[in-house]
Amino acid sequence: MNSYATHIPTEASVLAPDDTEPMPLDEVNRHARAVMANVEAVIAGKHSAVRTALTVLLAEGHLLIEDVPGVGKTMLAKAMAKSVDCSVSRIQFTPDLLPSDVTGVSMFNQAERRFEFKPGAVFANIVIGDEINRASPKTQSALLECMEERQVTVDGTTYPLGSPFTVVATQNPIEMEGTYALPEAQRDRFMARISMGYPDTENEVSMLTTRDLVSPLEQITGVVDLSQLRAMMAAARAVFAAPGVKEYAVALVRATREDRDLRLGGSPRATLQLVRAAKAHAALHGRDFVLPDDIDDLAVSVLGHRLVPTSRALGHHHQDSAALIEEIVTRILSQTPVPLGNQKKA
Image (cartoon, rainbow, N blue to C red; front, side, top):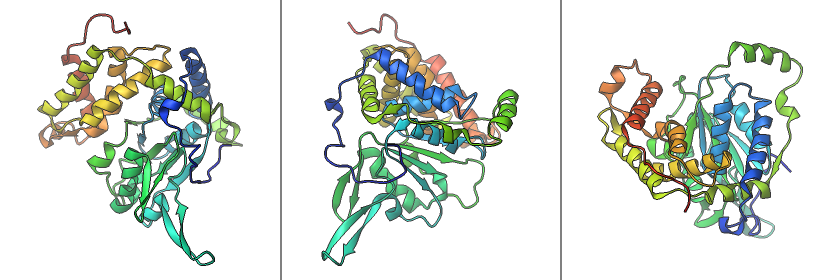
């Protein structure tokens, strides 16, 4: 049952990826449409953002939602979590939040005269981190091991996290007072970054009516259970990426490292996650092979938050780094040769 309770996963609940049989792609497409319809009942007019969020979930990555207050960042994260019948936890990041609040702590049991591990909020299948940049760097760093290795180490003992495990974090890029910017090392842990943007006039007027009496979030329920989600993830992993497509992804990321307007380009982790996301993107479209178009569609979302522009380039764009980086990635895409020939599995 979908709940916000934390738990320590048992050995049976932590399934190895290879133990799950891939779901047929037509079923992946059907379940994906159901999840998207569920989320879009809450977040209207944001089809691209919802699809990217679902792509990251199926690719077993982590998502960073970055935008101004009040545009539905947390609502999107909650709606996605409620659409899957699995364990969910929410962490409200504040300056006084401790690393042990996230990972857990060993406490002495006086009755049994031994230490017991009390799990933190990170022990869930989907972890919603609200306003992650309000926590101190020490607390932010508590997520590094969790996000990369899917485990928590406390007092020398390692505890595996559940499978799947996804962090969906939100942050406000405008308000800087009382916040701690995520360091590049932690931003690199997120597979993709998306922005919500303001709704159009029609959807904003409709929102005034639909949310007058009750929140639409209270009306949605899980449409995919945990075993189905694992099978969908296994189907995404099984999608074929031809050597030419992989070389194309590598060429794009290497170009970011050499670009004159960037002082920090994409890491090898960025290349890995770009291809993983492209596989999930292909699966959502009912294909068992990746096209260069899948790479192109995800390049800005997967690479953008990992890139740091030079001060010279940033000076010409009025300090709007997001718009600048999108322009740079788009330029690199246009300049990188696309592999020719059939990319289908032989």
